[in-house]
Length: 312
Image 1 (spheres, helix red, strand yellow):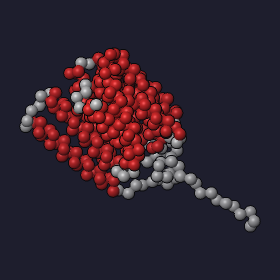
Image 2 (spheres, helix red, strand yellow):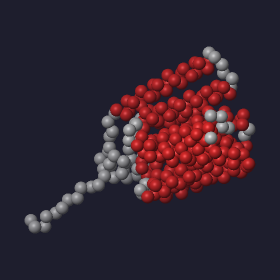
Image 3 (cartoon, one colour):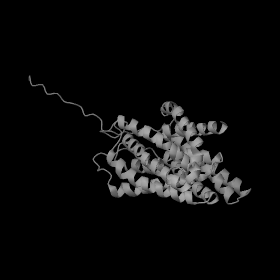
Image 4 (cartoon, one colour):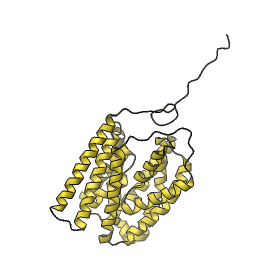
């Protein structure tokens, strides 16, 4: 019962982050699970199995509100599913001792990416008159994002959403909706890969999966409220710093780094983290620029209608 409560709290925390940022459920949940003592492969397997349900619900919601471009979903999600299966089987084949530093390194890199992504610049505006993304761009992006997501315990959103947003070819709400819908394919494929790789150990994760799912359901309404109250830049910088610090601790312990060098490393990370949080705060206070012809969501603004008076 105590373990179920812990995993539920992990699910609540991860969903709060994901609901406010549109990404980082897997990164946050995997980091917290590993810290609670769950093995790396088991943590990633549990997160992806829980995401089968959460991503399905999210995809249906985005479909209802017309936030999905199926062109992106198919050309990004299918390669992502292939990459996720490969990543799951690779992680499952590693021993517990070897998997820990691999997963910690990937999560550390993603944490740095999220920290920089939300503290150095404002989200890019959508360009007008550009062409859609082609398969040459989406296929390798999906393969890479799916492999990193499964082998590292998370990363689909930070890798794919940030890349698509930075290109400026698609409205932000369409990017988030399409990436969320395609993540269902990634979660299913990764779960199958872990089932093949872990076999009977895969079913040992059911309490973890149940806790994450329950926590995610509980936190979903609160996450919707949180996104309107907390700056995404500040939250992203905060979460990125937590992920960097916790996974750096894992690597320091694995490589046997002792004091005073471990203290120096942790101190440098905390100082850098504080610096980027200050940058994120400045970005939050900066005025938002919306290009002519677009509304605040990045969609084309309605054009004024000129009425001609034929009576003249």
